[in-house]
Length: 332
Image (cartoon, rainbow, N blue to C red; front, top):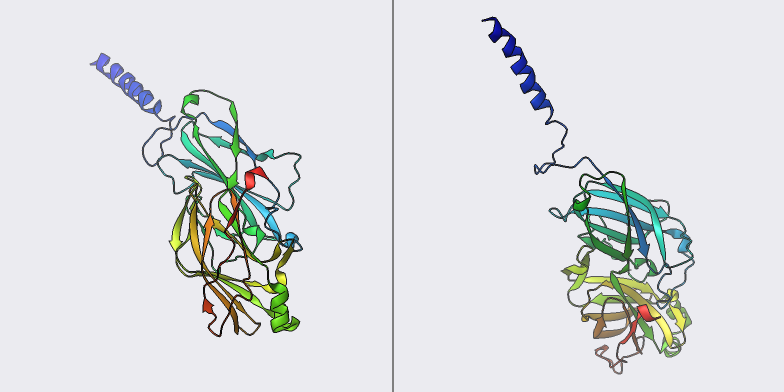
């Protein structure tokens, strides 16, 4: 009887120690054990910091925008919600080359991830989205109202797989990950060759108050998946207005409007209608069914007499125009 009383407390103590020894592991919601070791990840991005030099526009409003970097990490089993996010906002970036290390370090569990970096512009004095909704980088999409005719719509992204499982059980590991950024949207510009004729026909006062309304006549990608590099969210009825007073004088004519369209690696096209109106909205000219080709990494330029193309009292006509000029931005 005495021996049983001695052995019973010893047995209870052994069971208790066994149970306690299993409490040093954390478990996420899906039940997978997380290794307590963490890997420090530093990100070095390579990109062209200059706003696209081929899409000209007065940059007097440069102080109104700031450059933003979003660094997201996605688990392989959940590509829609970031497991970790870092946001960096710069009033001015000064770099001596095309690459620099983002001043951010991620401490990650040794699992498999997708690392994604997105950079765009937001309004100065705020950290809120301006051109694009970036709640998740797997579904970046244009905000309403659609803000076209701005060089600050330019956005770049980079993504890479991050396999940290090999670092399980290791301590104090630090990795520097190089990431090549590329444009998520293809720049497009419309150049008018007939501004002088337009002024001669309607007068200087009308020209100063005139507007160019860009209407996309068919589906246009309104979203972009930065994890896959593919456009998405094709929608109808996208349009924006460009005041003619903001047009840029180029050697080949007057850039009356510009835009950035989410693009993939394959060349595709958008159908565009251009309306030219006076300050009160009276229609002065209409160009219909322009087939605008575009492709990721290329600039598309369309050049024609967009302001005075009508040749009869019926101004709802199609006009011939110079073929798209596709310029490889990486070779400039």
